[in-house]
Amino acid sequence: MLQSLHVKNFAIIEETEVNFREHLNIMTGETGAGKSILIDSVNAAIGAKVSKDCIRQGAEYALVELTFDCLSESLTEAIKDRDIYPEEGMLTLSRKIMANGKSICKINGETVTAAILKEIAGDLIDIHGQQEHHSLLQKASHLKFLDRFAQEKVQEPLRLLDAAYQTWKKAKEELANASMDEEEKNREISYLTFAVEEMEGARLRIGEDTELEEEYKVLSNSRQIVDAVANGLRFTKDADENAEEQVLRALRQISKVSEYDVQLKELESILNSAQDLISEFNARATGYLSELEDSGERYAQVGERLDSINQLKGKYGKTIEEVLAYCEECNKKLEKYSDYDVYVEKLRKEYEKAEEECLRLCEWISSIRVEAAEHMTKAMKQALLDLNFSDVQFELPFERLEQFSAQGFDSCEFMISLNTGEPLKPLTKVASGGELSRIMLAMKSVLADKDEIPTLIFDEIDTGISGRTAQKVSEKLVQIASGHQILCITHLSQIAAMADAHFLIEKKVEEGRTQTQISELAEEEIYTELARMLGGAEITEAVRSNAKEMKHLADDIKKY
Image (cartoon, rainbow, N blue to C red):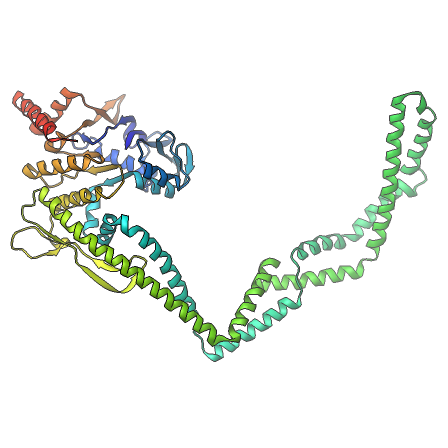
């Protein structure tokens, strides 16, 4: 569950930290107190797109941290599969948004990409805001809801279908690319034959161009090199007072007295080494000059070979490795064209085999969905009845698409009737705003029994409802909270009274600046906040008494 939220420099939040509890956490506050900012900060922490404008004015960055604990064994293993390792059963997700618009994402202090952060967070927390209602109005989303309901059975078949679909798609493309007439095929063969003969005729060797470029650099500067080496030899060998002769003279002098002192012996050894090094230099430099003076023909050969190699690299690849790889590819194509009808037939069989496998998996997935749809419609109908829909019908009919995809060949749409005698109609044509909120809550409650996501956040799920319906919604939230941690922002006292932990979000002005703060309420403070929600500006003793009674009744209803 979500143990704590730490927010710093986010919008009008300077810094706040809140520790949440199990089951139902309720957050209330006056309109404009900053409740939506709190949800925005959580969204930012789990990888949602954010603007640098979210940074509090005057601050250099914004920071949001979410700490989760009590992770289930299966959830822990799923996280470890992504090379993320909880520490003592805890996981901290953080995101730092910089003034330049960039952000730094971390999990347990280790930097990760925003994509990884979002993927991990998707296993830990599910945020439902008013904008999510729109997914109920999109037919394409309905199949996704069903697959979430059936995920235990459908997840693996869908994974297999995705792999099979990619194989089918590749086979289809190869077969389409293989379709060419005789004239086009002959042109291709002619080009490939010429290219292969040119590349193989060059007898390229990996690394040859680098070696030749080094040699060419030496040969093209041969005159300067000859002058420099010849001058070096003059100083060490050819001059009257050359280095070799001078070292030999010094050696003769030291040798006369070296037997008298160990240090003199060492000096004699150094001079011996120097004489050997100078002699070696003279011999090798003389040989080097001899080779370089006869290099005119080699210079022309190296230049010509480099030109040939560079021409091939300009036509067939940037490096010799790429040229050789392209040559191998051309040979394979020529081999394919040598018996083209057999090749095309082979592609056709591969395509047909891949299509058969996709259809087989689609049939399997469809059968799972049909069975799951029966259970889901029953569960949805009961959940809707629990939410004060007095007479509701809910069905999920299927339609087979003409062409399958990586998700199968099924299409389905939520059909609903909310009033007695009314025919079933697409959800998009029936529900009002308040009804849509309850339908989504029903969907969440049905999915909650199937999902392992430990924490659910509801942002103003009470839109457009009141009275008895509000009471039913509060009871449904309690039901979901029996197996999940719920964080819920609400304006309704019926829902707030059900809280296991009640938090107040409010604006305060400190040192001339407005900031949003959140704090957990004690028992008497809860009665005061419920009374405010019931009575408005003036809180009388009667209103406060009603608030206490509402809280006590709510506590009696909850049975975890």
